[in-house]
Length: 429
Ligand code: PLP
Image 1 (cartoon, rainbow, N blue to C red):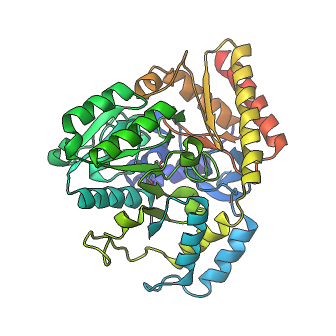
Image 2: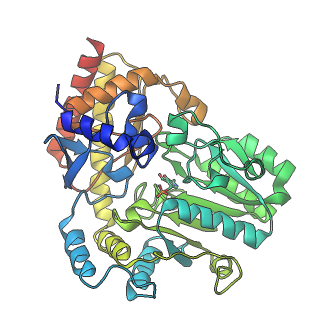
Image 3: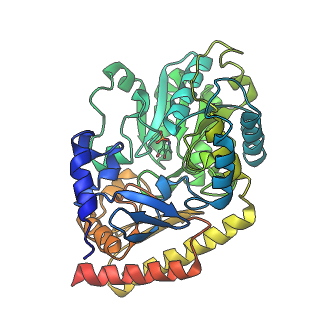
């Protein structure tokens, strides 16, 4: 067993200052019964904790680090940028450079606005949708997570699901009342909701490939239905691609389904590990944002030059060919995990889309939040710790996604598959 004495001490110390010892709940490893590792540095596909241990990292800062840790070109660009100052609160060429790059990859982003997190992006997108339609109700799907703003923190995935919080205390009832929720991938229920409330619904926000209850791809029929219903009822369709953007595919999940949302939110990869979120979409909608229109949005650090540089230097290195390589690695890993489970007679469902992957200890199928909840969470917790003990750092919850970076090597994939086999041996002995 690896000694993590320094991380244990650091966690104790941090717990005096931060609720649960962390700045974001799932980091605490609470539901897997562990002590979080305190990280000293990252390099490529690896992270190193303060006790001196080395891990192959599949969390990758919860998605952003598609080029791995401390990518040489990103670091060089950031060093150059920081020497010019860290923030001006005035326009820079960097913002337009990043916007052009985003639009060239995701053409539905006709106009956009930079923000500093995914939460800000989705929060602002629904404000715009409400402002444009002059309606209050929004629809979200059970187990989808769109950040921690009040209207979206209802029946959410990710940490909200991990800690079984459902609807957070502190969210005003009136706001929760205007958030209608529906099961993911359930065409009949969303049709009923639109029959009853269609003309009151400002927007439907959806993760087209869900990644906050593990990976669950939306079905073509489901997403197509959302497109048709929103069009019929004058509602705005928002694809929340904070996670799936530049992850499910180079051009995002929307390119996989051939469906054009009215608005898209981006985050994570788009900042290459710096704080960036983006909301945007149809020009006629985005023109309503202040100061061009009346719908207010602002930010002291929006479009921050360091954050823009992180995004530009990351997106410039992405190519469709790189996605083929990463996807191939995910395919091989997924097969290895399935084989490992089968040879140990453990039911498993492995889902993967592009560079996103996760597994459920579940008989399957897993198409929505209820299905995920039928997974064996106790087994997952033991299994997670068995992987960690071998230096394989994966998401510490069944409600989260693992990722692949361009830096993971074929040898590391083999090592990880061997690690899954060993973890089954360890947990079952
Ligand atoms: N939307 C989705 C789909 C996400 O996965 C997340 C974060 O995991 C968010 C929004 C919120 O982003 P942030 O944590 O940057 O506020």
